[in-house]
Length: 248
Ligand SMILES: NC(=O)c1ccc[n+]([C@@H]2O[C@H](COP(=O)([O-])OP(=O)(O)OC[C@H]3O[C@@H](n4cnc5c(N)ncnc54)[C@H](OP(=O)(O)O)[C@@H]3O)[C@@H](O)[C@H]2O)c1
Image (cartoon, rainbow, N blue to C red):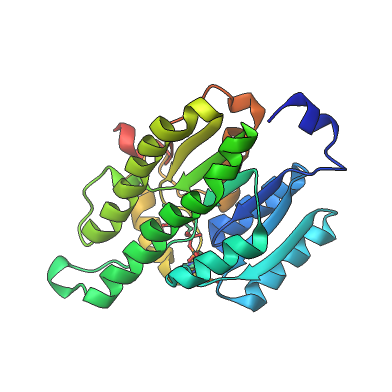
C-alpha cells in the first residue's frame, strides 16, 4: 500500500475481508487487522458468532461488519463479492478439517473440504484480485497448514486441500506480482481453536519442536505482518507458524 493510503487512513481505511472470521484463527485475524486500523468484513455461516466477532472489534474501537456466506455455495461467493465490492486485503482462512482414515472418508465430506478450503479461495481471488491489480496494490493470505507438507495419518484429504492452497499461492504470485499484488501462505501447526479437538491439538503439540500448540493470536501476528508494508518484499512464500514442526 502506498504512503498516500497510510496518510489518509481515516478517510480511506484499508479494507480487509477475512473468511471464517466467526471463530478460531479467523476471528483472531479479524481482531488483529482491525487493531491495525483496517475496516474488516467478517464472513462465515454462523450469524451469532459473526456478530460476536464484530462486537468485539467495535467494542475495542475498530470497524467491522458481518456478511453471512456459505463458501460451499458458489452463488454465495458471487453474492459476497457483489456485496463487499473491492478490498485491499483478503484472508482466505475459512476451512474444514475432517479427519478420517481414507477408506472411511465420505464423498460428501471430501467434496465439502475441497469446496470450502480450495474452490472458495480460488473464486474469491478471481473476484477480488483484479481490482487490487488495477489499483497496483493488495495482499492475499491463504491459511494453509503443516498438514499441507507433512503426511499425517487420517489427514490425507485435508492435507491435500492445504497443499493445493500453497500451490495456488505460487500460481497467483506468478500471475499478479507484476501488478503489485502479493500472495503468501501462512501454514499453522496445531492451534487451540475447536474445543472438541483439544486432544488432537495436544497430541500434535507433542510432535512440534516447541512442544506446545499455539494460540490463534500467534497466527494472527504473522498474518498482520505479511499484509503490512513491512513485508513488501515477501510474496509467494509459505510461512510456517508451526512451532518448528516442519523443520524437524
Ligand atoms: N486449528 C488448527 O490447529 C489449524 C492448524 C492449521 C490450519 N488451520 C486452518 O485454519 C483455518 C481456521 O481454522 P480454525 O482452527 O480456526 O477452525 P474453526 O474454529 O472451526 O473455524 C473455521 C472457520 O471457517 C468457517 N467455515 C468453514 N466452512 C465454511 C463454509 N462452508 N462457508 C463459510 N465459512 C466456513 C467457519 O465459519 P462458520 O462456523 O460460521 O460456518 C469458521 O469461522 C482453517 O482453514 C484450518 O484448516 C487450523
